[in-house]
Image (cartoon, rainbow over all chains, first blue to last red; front, side, top):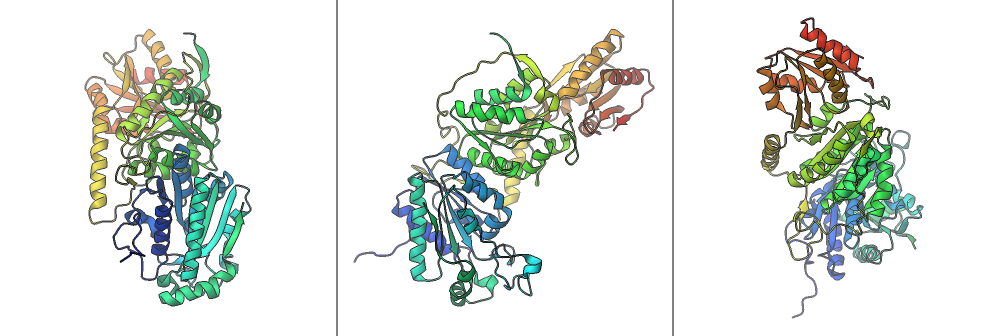
Length: 244
Length: 363
């Protein structure tokens, strides 16, 4: 009998702490599949964020460090400059990357640091009770926007990925999702390309991944996946934003 | 070897290169700009990395990454910028990562001014950021001493896997003094630190993955982590105290001063000695760990102490904690960028030894 599906070697055989239906464990898995397929497990150094994925190092079987909230790309920069031949990636949520770490991600992209950034956008602060994130949609209810995000009070959803794509230092920027099997395949291809770019020393690559948060969206896992297609992609359309 | 003239900021940069520093990130702020500018070409020349960061927050976190990767890494700034770095310094200490941080202090609080000051003593010696931790704090009083203490800073950082701060001020940073320096030309990076730093992130080839973290969520885990850190800090306190004593053997009055201020005190003392006044000086070289035991010892013989600082009175707390009320402690401080004068210190010495003492804080 031939085995056609198995746990990636880079993914530890342990249960995760993520809520049922959360996209993080899917993204973790895709990264590990790519790391295995590119045969880079022994060269990878990951920078884990503050947020729901703070203990990603409990699941990934390669070198990892934590980073202060939002400073993830700076830590990745320091590691990459010391070990230019290792494969360094940072993993960030929307609060980490698009709020507290806005300056850091813009300047890391602008220096075209040869790193890979995996940006998981679920539109809320999942770790701290589901407050409004910079990427929360207009009208979306969160624990700090109980009547829905109000533009007059709370401003607009921040399309940081489009903003980053403006910079000459950004070499590859794509938005994908993990809400359907077809989108999972595209997401994996994008992650793989972002890692391959680093191996080929092309410069800064970022993949934004729209990811479900059933707990703080107040939806079932299935409806959360449907909401990504029906609502989230209107503000955050999927596809390649930049590839040079 | 011929002596050359260099300012303190440049000397610290050159000493860092000699000590094997291969990574520097910084952000402009006066009065430490000469160091960032020096590193911008010396790091490149010596095969290391220089990054002009977008902020002090970014710089300290780049240093965090470089240190986690096994490199000897340094950043520098001045008071307001050091406040921004405190988040990162707390993480470095918590994650047990070595790093050297230079603070050329300026007048505060707030934006303050760009005159020399010693008002960041509390911040430097009490940890500065959140949580129970300490940084080793070295206080050079001269350009040549800055050279030696920079080497020591990297060694202590690596030995104890903890951040070390070099605490100077605008005078030390910008004043030129003669020094013998061999400008070693290092070609390429230093050999990998892997063998000496088995915890570093280098890719997990041939070993189990390394994890750098300060998050301990399990029951009792963080308390245990703190216990281990405190044991380390205890070891540093018992082994790494450094100070200089002048004339303390026969002194009725011991002046306690560090850094630039100690040089002014030194001049005042030599004049006082000509007047046959029995006064000496204890100069802490490590501000943390503080020379408590030496002060305790001196307090058995000396009749009084005088603390002189370029602040409204910060190190005086450590002197009080060391002497525990055994002797009167007088204070002369200038805050907000004022510099104590030799004459004013001499007046204080005369007043105290003639038992007409009074505390002064000139702001």
